[in-house]
Length: 264
Image (cartoon, rainbow, N blue to C red; front, side, top):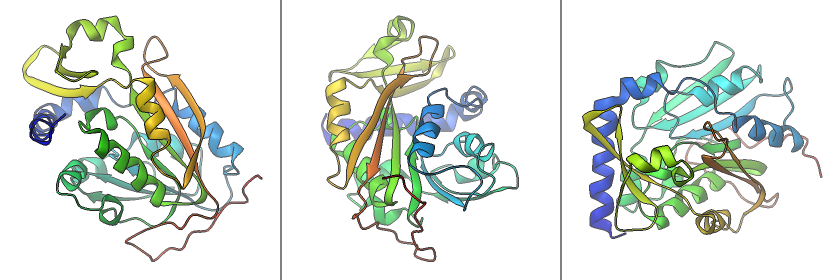
């Protein structure tokens, strides 16, 4: 994947979401089944419901449905969402027990401009940092690694990072409609028979999941599993735990990292 092609595909995705956001958003309201296992990992690592405020970074937060998922489980929740459609995200803020801030940031634009993504994100160190339904739109492998590293750098020592990695090649139905591109795993997909809606997506191989698991020397993989879709395996989830001696990075410093009582 060369830079010029990656920019063209990113522009295609930007145009797609500007054109089809409403219809796409309408199909993205329910929580994903795979999030339950993220929640299980949180509790295993000492993040029980009802104790102190849970701090979460949601990169590419979309319509904030992961925040709504957590708000039903954590009565004291503070979420920092990041996306390039902040007004639309803020229209979906969960109920009042959840304190939400949304930063309007073109994540892929920052990567293409060689800006330090971790420094661009305006959030303090968080207990949990996630990125769901986004990395399959990032065309360049080096940029995917940078996204994972930025999540790690914004996570408290002992905290968790969770990402979802789409594996569309596991669905014969989706694959039959996809237009393959030159690089393995790269496709163009249409949307609801709309001739003006087409987007770039990448289907992750297990080798690519391995590479992302090793993206940062400051975090270790603690879980990997498949979930979601009718077949229950369209997303591959990767959960990392940040080392207890790691130093979180953040541009916003009004809140210091406050660890939960982590299990040894």
